[in-house]
Image (cartoon, rainbow, N blue to C red; front, side, top):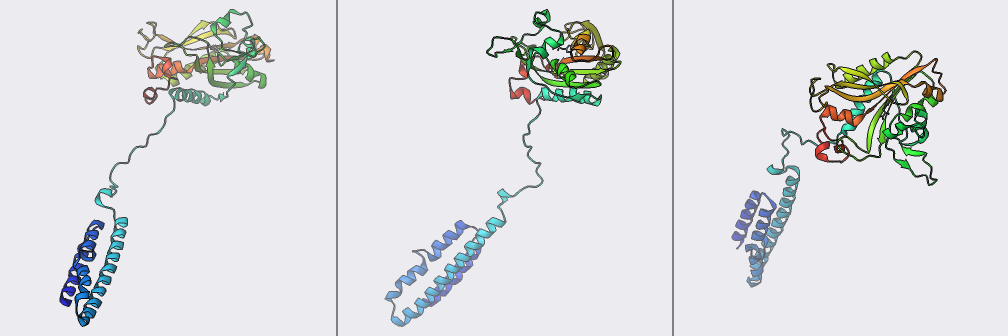
Length: 344
Ligand code: DAH
């Protein structure tokens, strides 16, 4: 029996050496230390042995049991350690794989164009300022030469703000021009500024009309400013934004707060001036309104029109973005369809 025990120990330890994972280790435990293992059988049969032999075999068997148990514990610890320090094949990191691209956000097409427009004017020395969306009738209309019953008010379908007093005094600005007045009230010439911001129109929406959109207003006031300065500035601007090869056209137009007033158009981006659907077969696309600041407007803000003159302009940002990106429906801008927005 002592011989058998010796063989058992040698065999158990040899097999333990080959164990490579926790599952095999458990099988090993059952085999050599479990209830049905040879060792347990021997320990159980001790009672039947003569005293002398029982002592010797018992001591030997218990010693082996302890040795196997501590080897088991040690092996378990080693296995655990190797799992933690050397991950299996499937968990290894392949450092040669290309990285996974993280989804990043992007700027709204309006914001992108707005930024471009502002950068162009900043480079020409204009400062960028902003004004309130909720305006007084005075700034939006009155001070811009559009009094109460002036027919030009029809150009602007207005969202009035109910003050509860029955009078129409506050509104959502219908254009960015009111900032011309606020600026000239506060600052003395020379003034050179642009004003980006939201404007509102109480209108049914369709492919070319939205009730909220962006405009950029421009204003320059100083001694000796002429229509030639306005032309130079806007020609440069159009070519910066739409390309060197663009032709730019000035035509007479009417806006109550400028005299003379002009409408500015660029040669069509699609047909280059030969006429197509985009330009209504005219070869030209109107992109902004402008003019020389009306003497009455200057007088109202205490700037002497005999000493000073200025030019002003205003443009719709979405319209410009539509031309640049070939977008055919303005309603796409603010319907938050990611399939649309992800393209920019
Ligand atoms: N405010 C005008 C509009 O919304 C655009 C405009 C025209 C602005 C002529 C100007 C200007 O500053 O001089 O239709």
